[in-house]
Amino acid sequence: MDADHHAYSILNDPRATAGTRVTLALPGQTPVEEAADVLDEVFRTQPGLSVIAVRVGADTAAVTSRARVRALRAPQRDPGAGDGATLPGESHRYRLLRLRCAVCGAEELHLHLDPDAPPSCPHGHGALVRTP
Image 1 (spheres, rainbow, N blue to C red):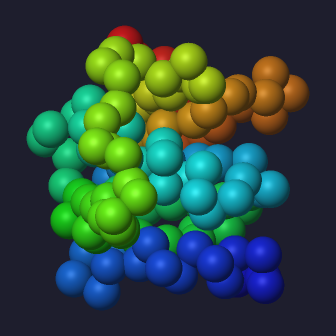
Image 2 (cartoon, rainbow, N blue to C red):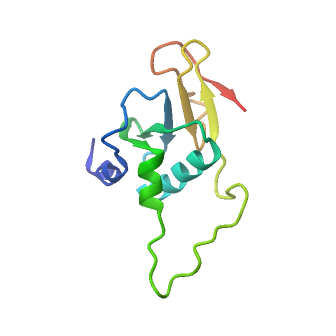
């Protein structure tokens, strides 16, 4: 893991298992704050998901959990803070693309897909297929 990915260590949950079947794949220059935003939305919209691996570029940068992200994203309240409300609905900054291996069920979530380098199963089963 290079120095750019060191900031992602804050997302690591030592109780999370490295054998998770779902991976969030982010571009190599994604700031950890943006990754936390994406993770927060993933966990909010997918209630059955509790652990996720985070890959930044080609490196696995963290394995995190719903509980860890929730703890990190908890509002830090001070006398000048607002009410902490967020607008309902989907993010207008990005849309997650969900891909799955038809053989083993491994899943990846991407912010974008490179048509010249389509994602493939981490277990060697071929190309991942987009799912709704």
